[in-house]
Each structure stands twice: as structure tokens, then as C-alpha cells.
Length: 181
Image (cartoon, rainbow, N blue to C red; front, side, top):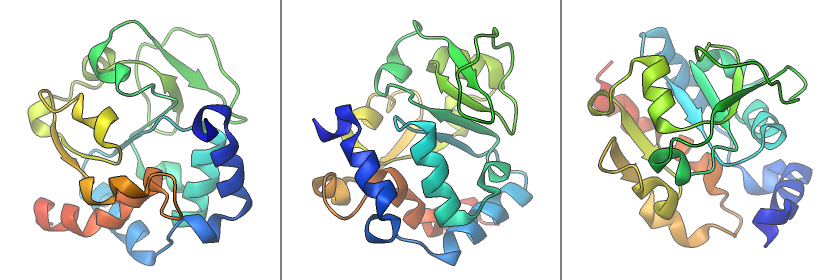
């Protein structure tokens, strides 16, 4: 209920330091991956206002420069197994735009969408993507398409001080080892 009504987002945004772990390693790993030509995308069920505030806190005001694609309110797991919802772009204020999306551009923020259009618009293929999920139920829906590494050991803390929508960034050291930069 707190998730659906938005209470959780409000509580966390009021006290980021209590819920989100911040570390210089997060920015360093994301920057290193991006500067070595790795394609990075962020996909979450959370609203843009929440993601923006949390990411600014974690990696700085220019956090969107680190990602090739940012998708909010994705409606996972339906994002992975439905073609029904088109992508919509958000403007710089987070307001929904109704223009038809023909490409997913760096620096833009998109809402909803689906995996079929994501792969079509990016040209990326599932076998070339390493996906770290933060929510076991939502992210296992994609396991047959993209190699998924769910953060199962933290799943029990979903509604506690450990805030999972951002805690997969704590595992960026794993990405460094895998990418062998």
C-alpha cells in the first residue's frame, strides 16, 4: 500500500541519508563504464521525481549524463512481457509529452514502454546485456531474454531502511570485475 500510494517515496525523499547509501564508488564505477563505451541504462518502476532526487544525492546533479537511456515508471514485470505500452518522453520538469517516440536518446527520460520497443529502438540484443535487478519478482520476468542477476539476498529488506531501488548500485564492483576494464 505504501508503495502504490506513494508514501514510501515521500518518506525516503524527506530523509535520503537514512534510506540511501551514498558512496564515491558508485559514481566512479558508472563513469568508468560510460567512459569505456559501455551502454548503460536505468529502468525502474519509481517516478522521475524520486529517481532524480535519489540519483542526484548518490552521484551528483549530472547523473543522467552517465546513462544512455533512463526509463521510469516502467511497470515491471509487464515491461518485459507485453508490447502494449508505448514509450513517452518526460520534459525537463518531469511533465509527460505526447510526441511519438522513434528513438531513445541520451539525456532524455522516458516513461513506461516495453522490451520489444526498447530492443527495436536501441538495436541492443539480450545476449549482450548484463542486467542487475533489484526486485526478484519483477526482474525474473526477463530471465529468458536477458541474463539476470537478482539481488536475492537483500529481497527481504524491501520495505526497511535498505532501499532496494538504488541498492543495486552498491554492486557496481561486480560490474567492474565482469567488464574487465
